[in-house]
Amino acid sequence: MLRIEQLCVSYGDLRALENVSLEVKAGAFVAIVGANGAGKSTLFKAISGTVPTLSGRLEFDGHDLSTIAAPQRALLGIAHVPEGRQVFRSLTVLENLEMGAQTPAARQSFDATLAQIYTLFPRLAERSGQLAGTLSGGEQQMVAIGRGLASRPKLLMLDEPSMGLAPAVADAIFERIEQVHRESGMAVLLVEQRVAEALHACSYGYVLESGRMALEGTHDVLISNPRIKQAYLGM
Image (cartoon, rainbow, N blue to C red; front, side, top):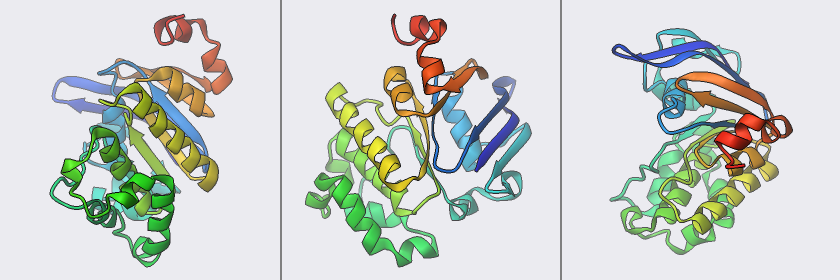
């Protein structure tokens, strides 16, 4: 579904990504882990089209993304839940979710999708008329994920969903993400600093270090890797 080959991204003289390659197959749960500043969020922005690429190839569902403007990439089935949630604070929960349903197919099926979102996050149903800016951090993250789901994507990209959340709240968010993948079969691409949780959830993972892919492998391969254990799992 998503194929990235030898991707390079620079910010001026700073090379943020260097020859990064990865693949997300239809229905897969793929995690990208690494320390802060490794280039994880830049990779997501390159996929979404909000930062320019220097070289390399980005392909989604057979489409060359370099020929497709950022606003049009959502029409292909890519949903990006950004780092820091970035909800529309002056809009209600329901209005935020409606903002995610911008494609014709998403608008047509919004009522059914909304019911699914409210089943997944009952708290949002309770607060549907409340301004998103008045919600807790965990509730805002639910809104951000729900907004992504409202577009009925083929690929759901989640950028640091646990950021700034209490451990118990982050655990609950991870459980809902795993539930979405398990029940919908939607492909999930997760960027996360909580390495243990990310690797537990994924079927395949990549380790990004200083803008380069340092390691990759299945869940079992990465969990058992001595370097992963020492550097990321504290073992």
